[in-house]
Amino acid sequence: MSRLTIAVTGMNAHDNPGPGVPVVRGIRDEYGSDCRIIGLAYDALEPGIYMDQLIDHAFLLPYPSEGEQAYKSRIMSIHDIYGIDVLVPTLDAELPIILRMEEELDQQGIKTFLPSSKNIKEISKSRFHLLDQQYGIQVPRSDIASDLTRLDSLTSELGFPVMIKGQFYDAYVAHNYQEAVLYFNKIRDRWGLPIIVQEFILGEEYDVVAVGDGQGGTLGAVPMRKTYLTEKGKAWAGITVSDPRLIELTREVIGKLEWRGPNELEIMRRSKDGELFLMEINPRFPAWTYLAVGAGVNLPATVVGLALGKKPPVSEEFEVGKIFVRYSMDLITDIAKFESITTLGELHHNHKES
Image 1 (cartoon, rainbow, N blue to C red):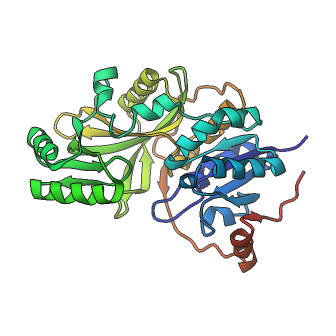
Image 2 (cartoon, helix red, strand yellow; image 1 turned 45 degrees about the horizontal axis):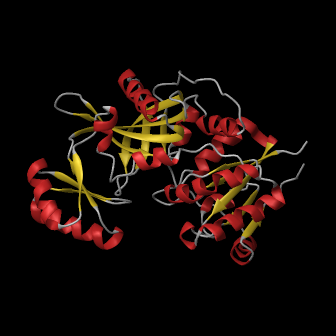
């Protein structure tokens, strides 16, 4: 019988690493050599595709911005050769295009287990503030601004400091109106309008990686506290923590949204009173996912099982006090491999095929 073939995206590993490599590590821990892993990348120097102990084959994909047809044709051409059983996308920008393809992928035998289009719409930054009104989920007060008049009105209402956030990326703390205008213009010029103006919550941040079954159930959740941040505010170290309130809030959010697939909840505990605020939901695995695996909850394997139609058991227990520390190391490879991925758009490691 042929091995299970699983394709995973997000093989980048710079100072803001993609989730692909830790997701593959989790899958390898579960399936070992009984699966074939295909790494899907957007750049020939994404380190994950050269990790031959994890990846069997690698292929370059066109960027989603190049259009659905080009993206779909590339996925299908890889599928024709290796027969992809499960596709696990791990980057935000991929989800809209893959969700539009989901039914056709399924018909071709490529299974996924992704958030629904409704999930994606409800957690978008421009609509995030509505979660309080619609579901009673406590989030910071916020609204959108498309001009400086509205910015002035919102900053007067919310007070300073205040968060100025782009609808896709970037977020800054403005301590006065001059800074708010500066960040408004900076984000507008880079990412366009509207701009989100959000109440600033002073407190301690926690992140939770979880998987929802799409029917309101939580199949696993592991919370962690960041212990070391990069200059970009990304976690470079973290520790699993025991806090029933974080798990309770995670289950509440997944239950009310009927969340399907992986996610990362960013939660702030306000310093003055300990109140919990949901700050953001990322609709995919985070780059620190392997900490959950190390704590005993293999969520990447859970998603693969769900995609294959299995009903994995609920993982309620995890080890508290497990720490991850991210590190950089030089991966030495051969120029022939780089030439292969740049000229052919594919790279094959010397693994024996069954």
